[in-house]
Amino acid sequence: MTEMAELIIPSLLETLYMVFFSTIFSILLGFPLGILLVISEKGSIWEKPLLNNILNSIINLLRSFPFLILMILLFPLSKLLIGKTIGTTATIVPLAIAAAPFVARVMESSLKEVDRGVIELSLSMGATTPQIITRVLLPEALPSIIHGVTLTIINLIGYSAMAGSIGGGGLGDLAIRFGLYRFQTDVMVASVIVIVILVQSVQFMGNTLAKVLNKK
Image 1 (tube, rainbow, N blue to C red):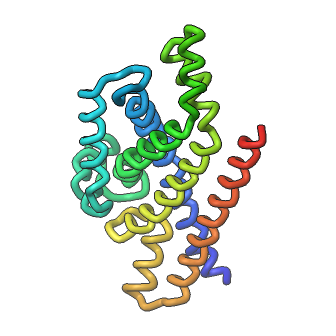
Image 2: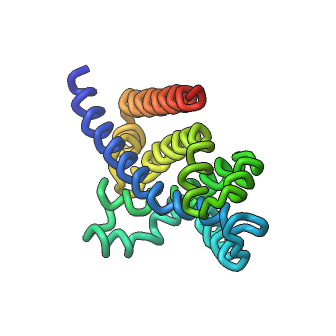
């Protein structure tokens, strides 16, 4: 058990490190994209059809790439930003970029759930576009946004496990190195169990927070 813990704990910390920072950066990238998608569509509060079409095309293009292929394509960017192409820190770059389009779609879906009547009422009272975004759209859609962020984190946990197959580190790397190459099935099973527990914990916390915010 001690030897197993010495293998699992460092890999778990690497996974948490990758997922935490890639979640932050993917939200920083995807959050404004999602808002722009909603407010720039035809008939919305800041109608820009050309911009909306361009954003939709870019997001659809990025989402069409399988993660492992996208990660390989982004090796030069990781090299430029981090100074290396493999390792836990370098993996954050493709993880964030891969998740950003998903975050944008989640934001778009959440904001579109807001009652159109509330938006029109705000417009009739003279609210500006930034005021509608910050005081109407985001507060009204917050529980749904929390659910979306929860799904993003869970997806990133899965992506981080796949990244282990090409030197990304974390629990996926541990499962592959010991379970596949060294035929230590117990290590692979333990890695999978930890990943499952991690996913279930994130889902529970996300659901709980969304319910609290929804009641408020």
